[in-house]
Image: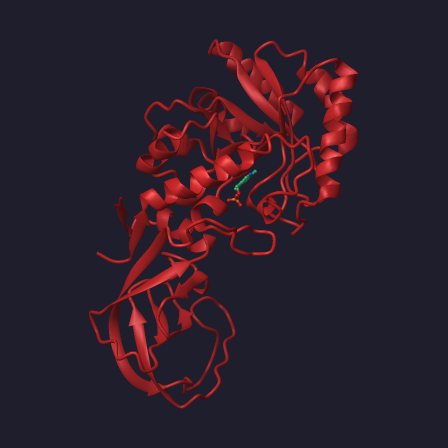
Length: 348
Ligand SMILES: *Cc1c(COP(=O)(O)O)cnc(C)c1O
């Protein structure tokens, strides 16, 4: 059945190890992030066999579906107040910013007789999660009073909402703030978490003092997310998707008739390129955002509705029933692994 997502497990293992070793040389602990492939248990187990201290995911449900792991489980989306019981049960540590939630987490940890680790998030300009710098010192004072909470350190997130990327300047700000916290409270913090795959555009140039990164995309696709470039020595073809052609007809390129908005309320316009060999693929927006696909053949992606992708097959000679293979960027992987309609084939 198609869409068929093909995953080359040994290449994924290579990528994870290559980055783990590269970062270890700089004293940085890597937590691989599994949300990009919806934490498929066979792949999480493979990560777990590589000896990571933490395996990270944004969703408690992704931890809940795993068997026992050697690594600790790091929740990287701020925990919701409504799910704290499961947070304590199915994870060992989290990124967090809200003092109210930290207190509630301590209460739940006490109830379950557990100690729970936290990394306090600091806002450095991207404007997603994190406390402003001036609010960090007072928050830490409160955290240190909580019996069932272990305070691991500080973290930042970038490249998400505001498009702000990690730089020597903002990473150094984080390191300075960590030192200030350590001096103020006479503690030593093992983790200074410098971000995600956005940081991998400067794999050698991280300022000293960053001790931890949370990386999904670079392991999965071999790319960093600040400039969108490939990172050296990684496989870029861990994942591919196969889609089936269900119609091939020679038709005009410009729609005709009375034109209104399309099925998604979008106003569309088309250039008249004359007749073309138009193909329809049995895959649509319900499966993946089609603009994230990268064709391996000389074809052009034209558009997509809920269940269909329309392509210009040019002179490839493809016919109905043929299978087209694509690579893709991150958004398509999220869609494909989340969708119930994808067949997943894991190859060695
Ligand atoms: C998703 C996420 C990551 C991993 O991002 P990649 O770009 O896949 O490396 C790291 N940290 C946080 C907080 C995230 O939400």
